[in-house]
Image 1 (cartoon, rainbow, N blue to C red):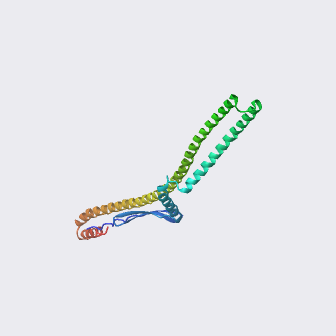
Image 2: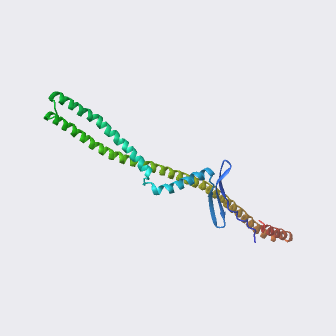
Image 3: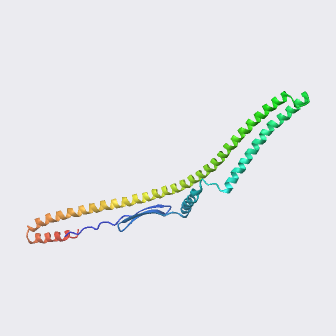
Length: 232
């Protein structure tokens, strides 16, 4: 029985960065395992993203008391500015009308005053109605801005997590490719060695047959070839 070469052991694969192994692929028993070694900084970023997502998601659309106070404060300031602007427009108009009517008629009990007063008040009422609509729109804007900032923050956390996962998969894929290259090389080398050994065995059998027919010395040489074949 001829001697057969032992099949090579599993070739592991690694990826190193600045002398440090960041990813590896190895085999234990029937299980092939790939591993990524996070740096301390990477782990802090990854844990922060995961923990922040977990704690923020349940409350992304919930406004606590401080948030509501902040929105109401901005809305009150917007309302006060709008009212001040309208007062600065219509109060002087009314004062000017009264001064004009008093100088011309001596009293306000006349149709000219009432017509002008009704016109001013009508315009002011329309302006106040528009302001009320603007205040409602402003409230929606403040709420939407707050939500947009929260969603942007959550997207940022998700991007951090996705980028880390992508880097891990890329490095692990690299270590797996290196392992596959090593195993492919070993398999080819083993096959070539087996082929070479098989060729010598065939040659030895043929030569042994020829030598056996050449008398005692030939038979001795034949026996030597057969013995040699067992160790190839």
